[in-house]
Length: 539
Image 1: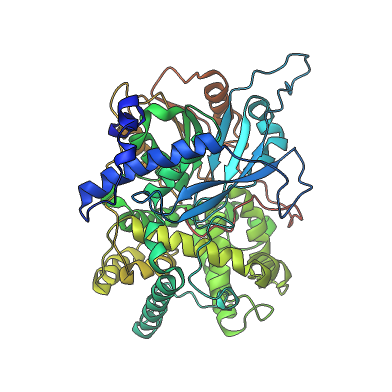
Image 2: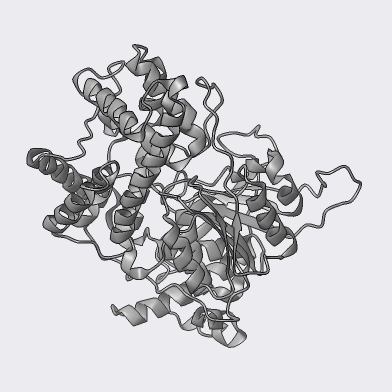
């Protein structure tokens, strides 16, 4: 809101007087706003020199790659600079329906897939899919790797060769000895982040991701931003909408994080663990309805016993020497994100209990060749969430809250703890979470998409974001729980998204519903690739 003033003619006169900010919160915030204006002005003048993608020059769909330069620290825009990797596929201008009509180009659609820690660099390839061709006709599809990810000034907290340490255990009610072991690992991981990244580590956070997005907008030559964020991408998209409302053209928030400052991030993770228990129950009930196919039990309770029997067996003798209870749990957590994985996971569990470990090993093993990317994603996830907000620093708080939660939601609770526990021992300053929100008329109408039973970003987060962004419209896929709805199998959801992005048209009501997509059908293990990003550990 106030940030928009920096882009007026009068505000530009302030830039020449920019000096290092005094060490106070208010002065630093002012310096960061001014620094953002400096960076966007530079990016607008420089643009992006797109050319062949360095690691895949023969990509289909006319995709090209380039870089945009941003300050590491926006309070010091003349200090160290970092480069963000950007991918783009130009609007095809071709109507996917048989006609000779040339589609009007509407600028760039920028996408972020979430995480924190996942790269959207190759998002432009999605325009090759039938569900995206109308949007790809009208928009340049733009994806990028946010700071710390991939080739964008990558973060690392641990030697990738030591990252996959399996087979691993996954106790739902860990012993005191096991907790001490994991506390020691969390401390070592936090220390590794500080040692490897040094003083730069403090600048990897969501507010800077939002500022980077404005620099990217300017570099693309867009006066106003059209943006789609999924999962965590909705959070810094909401930060962007709050900081730069006048720079927004259209925004789609797909599977929204709860932006309430009091919930970023410790309480959001507690909410996620609780929600995953319900999603795990949904999956078990589906398996039970297909007992004739899988033979894992006729009730959700019987299916849970089958899973626990497999976990206990793997604890004694890991499948293929690689898959223990931790890898089994990781594979089934992925199924909590996407119900199109249910047939594959159920088949693997059934085959394992019948004496064939092959499908389970294929789905759950950790591949050494993926260690660098996986370690980088974890490092960015931890750094951003730890830097974004205060976390409890007393282990007794974590132990109390999660022991209580695990009594009713054991499936993900402790897994979530071990993922985020480095934040209890984090070195360096924390950001104060921005109070996301816009008033009537400050922001163009925006679209929020949410599945009612989404576990990764529970539905209450969509309701909270809808409440905070005046003029937003919430489209809910009822009685469904897949994470990430845009461009999926629900024609109703896709229809609302296309109407908004292509015509600026939203439903007449502030909230509207879509019926759930059909349940997956049981089938033998498919050789088809899983949905991209299915191995993501959290948001």
